[in-house]
Image 1 (cartoon, rainbow, N blue to C red):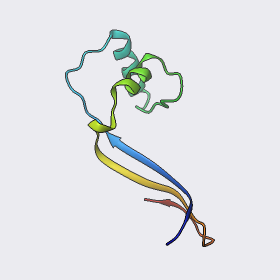
Image 2 (image 1 turned 180 degrees about the vertical axis):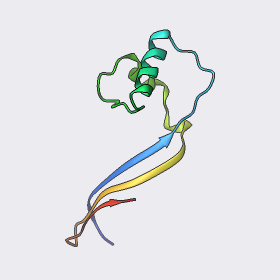
Image 3 (image 1 turned 135 degrees about the vertical axis):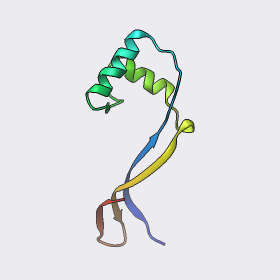
Image 4 (image 1 turned 120 degrees about the vertical axis):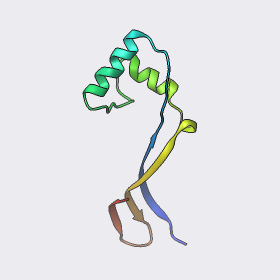
Length: 85
């Protein structure tokens, strides 16, 4: 048995919705986010669209999960592995 001293993981999943109604403001903000690359930091203040995404995106609706191990450090050995997926 080994002790993992530190483990950092990035979890990515997809959620798909169709035929949903949103306000004009949220639709415009979502469109602007999409046009600027589609990535948003959900911890930052990006307006109502990010709040809407936080409120309406649920892991229970997810499909196509991916895990990436970003950092792994074992306590018993002097091993540090980065970027394993």
